[in-house]
Length: 303
Picture (cartoon, rainbow, N blue to C red):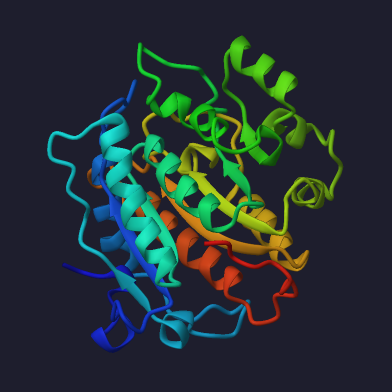
């Protein structure tokens, strides 16, 4: 098995690496295009072509802190809650071992598991959700564990006020009412593109977050021109720069990124740039998250 960035064993040892990649190739409720179960493998393979050096942080993070890659999780016949339990146990064990965990999906349903694991360790954390869809339906196509319901499940174990959504441009009336009633911090793509939040909208996004921030990144947050390889692409999405600028602002503000998942890449044969874009996105976020000048040192983990 190739590891993330295809780095030598010296820098990818599970024991000595500060970062661990968890592969969760789970796909059970996709409603339009399929193939998300192949996303983690495609990301790992594409990452071999991502440069180690990051000019912005002036370092080769993978060699400085180490990045371990685990074998893909096996779900067998487990679906819904039982499948999420498999992921949550794995992520929880890694957090206890003081690893920074990156979970690769699979459909967005999987995100509820690492988010739950992290909120147990960081009880005051907020969730920064990059997405085209709000994913706040009580259920979809008869399933409360649908990819379209993942954030509704998250809001059952943490306050909706600590969820911030960026790039939303597809939702139903039920979800809009949920956002209003429960005060979810939702930044619609249309409002961002029209300038309703001004030029410094990234600062406004970050102002809604607590000191500890977990990022869940559905790749369909990016415009289909950049990210065609996803099950439910929506026009008028974010650019790569816009998404990364929000992450930069998280770090500039002194907040701490405590965990990350990236989901919904559905690889398309002979269309490789989305796979590489996703791999580079992950490494870029890691470089920003591990900048030594992070100012927030007051937050403490709660076991």
